[in-house]
Image 1 (cartoon, rainbow, N blue to C red):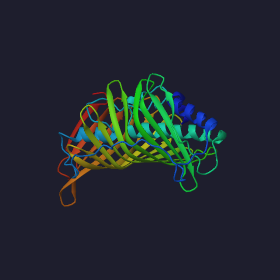
Image 2 (tube, one colour; image 1 turned 30 degrees about the vertical axis):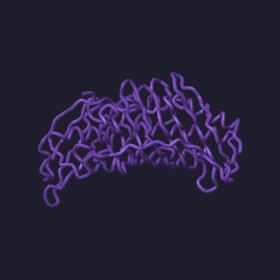
Image 3 (tube, rainbow, N blue to C red; image 1 turned 135 degrees about the vertical axis):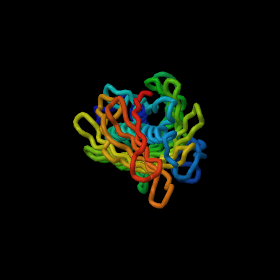
Image 4 (cartoon, rainbow, N blue to C red; image 1 turned 45 degrees about the vertical axis):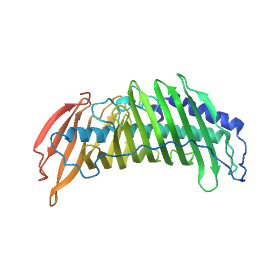
Length: 337
């Protein structure tokens, strides 16, 4: 997996952690407690429909595309958090959940290695003021971290128009959990507070919480997160949205479950009929089936649609409008359309 992540996407974090290792010191406020300054920001809100979606021909493609990509349909692909998610692949056209999983897993391992090299081990140590580093193409990034005997190490990254590899970041990311430098296992909680990423005119703002768990050859990301398209003010909600990834030699095997809220249509419950296969050299999956179940229109009968991947360039949408278990409508679509 580490070969999939470009190291320079973590340049700011690496430099800052090295500075902390060299400068870490102990500080208290007037009340005698260690303090940890974090800038507060107002979270975005979801104001769309919260009822189950009635899936039909006119909305099935939009719901499934947005549920899979984590991006508003027709407004461009998902911006990554810094750089390509895979060698030879553009993260800007990969699912948001996969981009987040790959990016933060790599970041966690980077921080873990640096902490092992010499971060202070005494509980209660904190950096009371921000250390700022300029972005390669503008802006700045600051990091704070503290150690608690109860909660372990907390890390907070604050971005202010920080630009790296053409992507501009603003907002706060907090990371909490134990990092074991001698193992590939991670168990982390990540929180966003109106964190935005912009690339080539496509801008998204995200707020919420991620739970990341990894082992040597598999990873799991569970999200309760809002994703706002800043050009349309449209906000998507991914609730208990779980992506499980099993790594193979040259591809990832992915399953998706959970609930996805589309503001104009309501929520659907997601499941994976056949695992989605994404080769590391491709942007899109080459096989797999994602199913969305919507509103119950008669007892025991729910509207339903599925996205059937045909190859890395196209997929098919099947729709069951009357909930009888038969897909009456079907058509093909290209990923780039």
